[in-house]
Image (tube, rainbow, N blue to C red):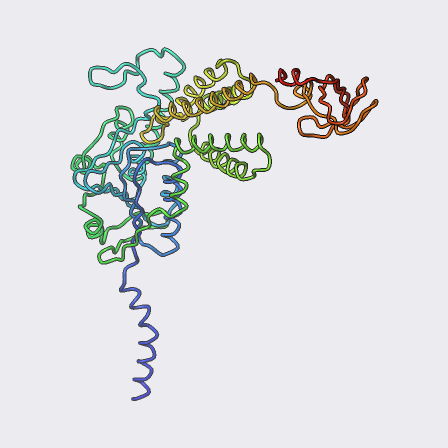
Length: 452
């Protein structure tokens, strides 16, 4: 009998860790997504979903508050959601938050869509292309209006592409297809209550704990099969952006990228003008590479980038080839126009402010005109060195001369030649130079006093 109890005890101890693990629900990962959606946001969400899979999370909650963002970054996030083996719930929170433009697409692509009271979503029309034609009485774009340019045709293509994209996401998740198309074509928006009534979202919740309580026991269809959530009492792990995502978010800001590019160009210019300092060259090359890396991740208008570089080239040329301000002024104008055109999007938070462009142009122009003014002033001053300054200089013989000898000219010892014999200590005046030999003539004190 005692052996039987020993056997039961051994089996119980062996099964105890598994029973304890089964009783404890898998954790839930919360991924904050706030501000404009850009390359840094896409990188953060993709790596966070991969980490949620590694840590065995049963659910990843994407807590959103965004005005929209770049189309490429939005599609990168959606691809990560669709490929994730962990269910993803998009939660527009806290109250007062929004999921506008790109945020609406992300919410439609998620396995679960939720909103907090006092939030809204919608306005998913690509803002850089606008409406396809004059609106009719209902406020819809009139597709029958004739296109006046190639831009109208491009606008219709992009709107139709965006509408098809959100329609496919709605059909995949069983959400309201018609309203999704209206959000793209008519830029309409919905509050949390209306979104729930129209089957745009699955539920509303006050906060993360309330959301997890409402999701407990919910079945989520996945590619690998239906998964049942056990979120009541589950541990919550928040994954804020790490240093990599924050750094990427800073340098991919169009304003910061433009400043980095300017610092890089001026640093390299200073190093090339004054070889040997090293530090300006290293800092300049680093800033220029960071700026170019950021620009290649942004929707850059290459005509605008060319105008920025042309403007900088003209302003730099003004410093070395003073043209009475023509090159400098032309460079400032080209720089401002190029800066306005540089980032090809109208999404909030992703453009270069006009005030910053004007300030950078003014600082660059002031620096260039200051340097060119100093160079022009230096050119007008009499030359104090070289052969030109040496001719006409006065000196004193260091020994007796009968043909060639030595004299002190401007504090230096020179070998001199004179057709007239000269005595030691006799003042002389330089009349010509032949290599390292100076031609001198006797000089009186009166001539010395009149010499410049």
